[in-house]
Length: 202
Image (cartoon, rainbow, N blue to C red; front, side, top):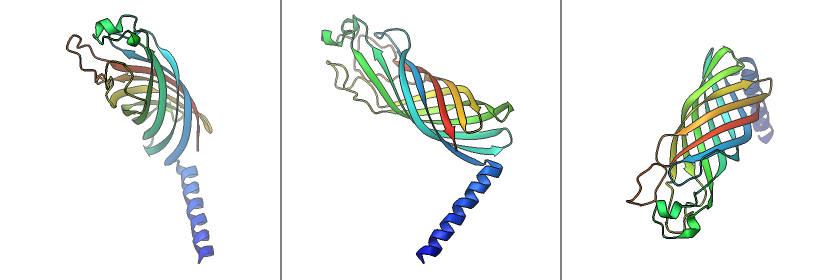
């Protein structure tokens, strides 16, 4: 019985591999690379800071020239408060000035893949939903400075070589990630990042 089950499993995997190889209906892969991220908001230093991302993806090619791609990506970047942060937000704690903060997110992009004259070059657009997984208690005078969720828009390009893939995308946050209760300053904190990635498509 075990031998029969094993034989059936092998035949099913072979059939799936054959279908994928012929039609490329469903493809999987892994990717990783560099992040250039920043937190756009009053009290934080301007400019993008270097970080990294790593994750996996699944592609479904629905019709010729169009498909969808879902990903699960861990990304990490850093930001830094300005030297007068405690005065801007009335935290009353000078240790919040010039403080480095890790921004770690587990993100799920849901992207449309649109061929640009060739199945190897794709335009990617769609939403991204992120959950903050780093410690949110980052400021001395606040219990929780950041909200746990982030909703963003993604736009970029995907180059599919025979096994290797290369991607470049811009991600802009739509919602205010600030959870700091401060009546003196109502400016929004929004994430922005540029991702350059390299991966393997199976």
